Length: 383
Ligand SMILES: *Cc1c(COP(=O)(O)O)cnc(C)c1O
Figure 1 (tube, rainbow, N blue to C red):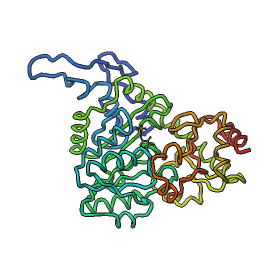
Figure 2: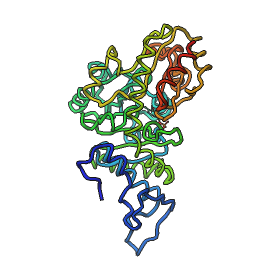
Figure 3: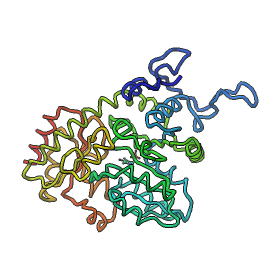
Figure 4: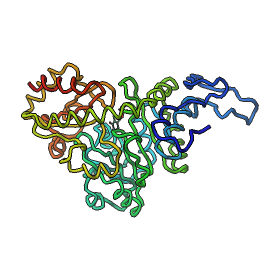
C-alpha cells in the first residue's frame, strides 16, 4: 500500500509507516531485529533473506524516503559518510568529480585522503558560479556533487542551471540535500540523478541518531547503489530505522519553526555592532536570496556570522548557555560551532583562508526553542 499521490508533504511525512503492517494494523511500524529469515522451500523467499540485503523496517523507511524525494529508490546507511562513501564507490580509478568548495568537511576529507589514493580525483569549485563548473569539466569528469546552500557560508547554487550543465556534459548530478530536506528543496525537479542526506541532521532532527541516505531518481541507478550497499554493508540498524521513521513524522512542523527562528535570529544578528557579516539566504541582501526564493520553499535553519575578532568568537562559545557549543546541526536543540576548528578543521589552512572560513566565523544551527530565548543567549554571549 502506498500513500495516496495527492497527499501533501506534511501528510505523507506524518503517515510514514501507517498501514504498512497489515497483519496487526500497527500505527507505529514494528522494529524487525531479525538478522535472518526462514525460507518456505528451496528457491522460495518471503522477500527477506538476510538483513544486510533487506529488512522490513528498513524497507518501509526507504520506500517513504524515495517517495518524499520523488525518486525511484532509496538506500539508508549507518551515517551520511557511509552513504557518500558508497556513492563514490560507483566510480573507478581515473574518474574525476567536480565538487562544491563550500562543502561539509568530512566529504572533503574522504575525497582528499581516501578516494584520491584510489585514483578518484576531485576539483573543488564555487558552485554558485555556473561558468566555473563548466570551466572545471575534464574529459574524465563523471559527476558534479553540490551542496546548496553551502557549508558553512550558505552560498546558493542554481540547481536548474547545474542540471542543464550536467545533462549537456553527461555528468551524474548529485545534490547533498541535508540542509533543506525534501520539505524545502526537491533536487529531482531540477534534473538531479542522486540526492544525498546526512539523516543525522534534520531528518533525524533530535541529535540522537546517526544515519545517511542515498536516493536515485531512476530505478537502474537505484539498483546499482543497492548493489554497492549490499556488497559493502553500511546499512542502518532496524532500531535506528524505526527512530528515523518516528522523526520524519514531525519534519514538516519542525522545519517551519527552524525557518521562522533562523530568520528572526539572522535579522537580530545583522543589527549587532560586534557582528560584521551574517550569511543566511533568507536575508534580502544575501547574494542567493532571489535564487533561493525560486528554487526552495524555505530558507532553512542554518546561518553563519562573523564577529569582530577571533577572541570574540571564543568568548561567545564559552559564554553560551541555551545554545550548545557542539558540532552537528539540524536538531531541535540550537547548536553553535567554530567551522575553522571543528567541522572544517581537515581542510588545509590556506584553502580555508581562501574560502573565508576563519576563526571569527561562527555557524549556528537554529533550534526550535523560543526565538526570544535564543536571541537573549546570543546577546549575553556577545556582551
Ligand atoms: C553531517 C554532514 C554529512 C556527513 O554525515 P554524517 O551523518 O555525519 O556521516 C554530509 N553532508 C553534510 C552536508 C553534512 O552536514
